[in-house]
Amino acid sequence: MKIGSYGAPMMITWQLTRDCNLACLHCCTDSAPGKALPGELDRVQALRLADQIIAEQIPYVMLVGGEPTLQPWFNEVATKLGDAGVFLKIETNGQAFEPKPLEGLPIRSVQISIDGATPATYGKMRPGGSLEKALTACARVRHAGMPLEITFAPTRLNIEEAEAVIDLALKAGAFRFNTGRLMRVGTAAKLWTKLEPSPEQYEKFYRLLCRKEAEVAGRMELCFRPFSLSEELGQRKAEPSGTLLVLPDGRVKVSAALPYVCADLKRMTLAQAWRRYLAAWSHPKVAEALADAAGDEAAQARANAWEDLDVPEVEFAGRGQAGGKE
Image 1 (cartoon, rainbow, N blue to C red):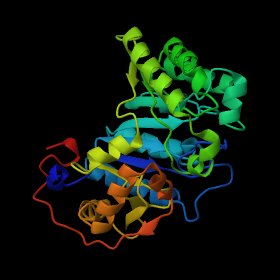
Image 2 (tube, rainbow, N blue to C red; image 1 turned 90 degrees about the vertical axis):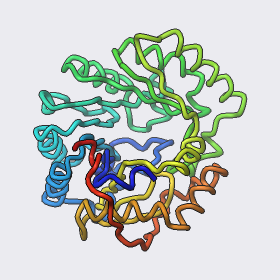
Image 3 (cartoon, rainbow, N blue to C red; image 1 turned 45 degrees about the vertical axis):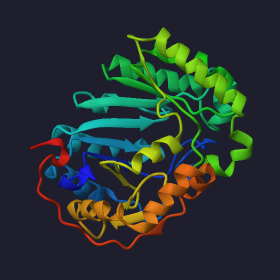
Image 4 (tube, one colour; image 1 turned 180 degrees about the vertical axis):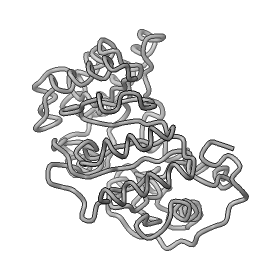
């Protein structure tokens, strides 16, 4: 396990809240209006975690949700991290996103989800949302000089509009377009029989992506490999990710696609959580769950049924490439 020699994560994916201003049918985190997780980090706890991220010299942080901008301390945390030189990626639905407070920070990208090329389809996928507002947010991001990514989650409700959404992303000035098979996680898992595209739709979709990849080469990157979560999990058997996934209440998951929680940042330091994360990847329960989820898509539906994993902390060989810095 190469990451075993790292003294800190290479990246933090930080879910700031499970609250959201939309109720998307395919949400992998079960987020929706009024669904903030009990015991979510408060401002003081969040700023303390930001201080630890800076101290551990972690170079890259993704701020996600739910809708991360709903946290009243979102801008304060982003500014603290950015002012310290931490690169940031912001994942937002764009319904009320204002980039101006983030200007001057090292923003690696702002990712906005566009799950339909027409207002009607977008509204079906993202109840409570407006395609016009999302596209306006894209324009504001580019006007602010920030790199823009677009994400598209295919379902049987919107997959026929995929090419039109790719074209919208190119027109909006996105440098990257992210997609792949729908993940059977969270809300999507509960609505699977309604949302899952047919094998024929997926085959047509994949051919489209290969064609559009060549068509937009040099103008926008199409990211769709690995195509499925199962493929990605198969790769994790050989090499665990160097990313810590922090839940809104400060707990740390072994993987977004697995149910296990290995640490609690309300009770321990980020360095302690990292050592427990490393130990978790050697736990037989994790190995079994990883094999199940990689081999059976239905097993991925258990990802949000969180279960504490009792693991010891492990020592590491030294900082080495910890956090990507010497």
